[in-house]
Length: 105
Image (cartoon, rainbow, N blue to C red; front, side, top):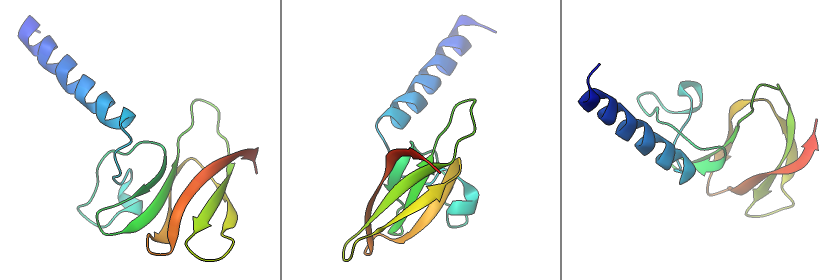
């Protein structure tokens, strides 16, 4: 591998990490997104380009199921348990936010 290739790979890797750190609102898994709409996402709440809300639970080496508060535009919202990965929450016209409560299920 040449130095030029190493530099190119490092630049691409840095761009990917910067995109994740910026919290880009894009789908993380093919099963959670519309066909052909697969991109990288940060952890937590996000909305895709079609107006659907999702929550991505990222985990390290320890498998955890966490409690997430789903905030709706009307009504009290709800508490749900989320396994590692991405879960669809519904249209963004109904779901305005979701966040980890600090509790495990």
